[in-house]
Image (cartoon, rainbow, N blue to C red; front, side, top):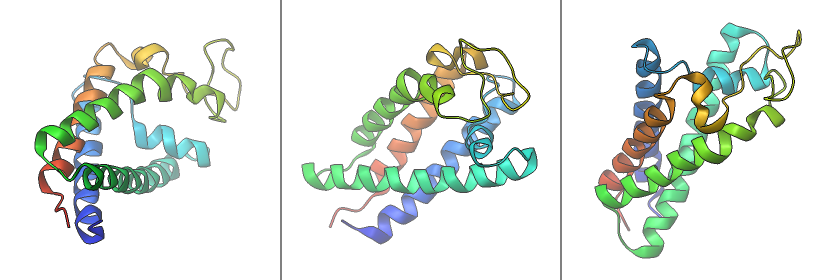
Length: 158
């Protein structure tokens, strides 16, 4: 595995993914803020949560980039299309499986079955993360597809 390449392009792809999701939120396309949601797992302080969330999301992006690199190396191919397919699959997994189970592990997120409590103030994502807006699954799947496309395009096989 080409570690310098995957660290560079994993970082770049994660920055683009995060920027796209925050831009989509800023333009009113979705209400989801992944770094904030991730950060509030670790702290109730809303300002620090964003910082912690960005750092954790960056680390996650690097870890997933390593998984992508291992996959590319095992099939001896890395390309824009192949990376985009992997990103699409990851995006679908995020909205179909990962976000809906988040209330079960997030200490500050309300579940679909229990109402708000003083310590649980975040809205649950719900099916396909639709509680954060009807465009949310599209935003997340497209941004993850672009993440994969960046890694697939620029990762250099050894």
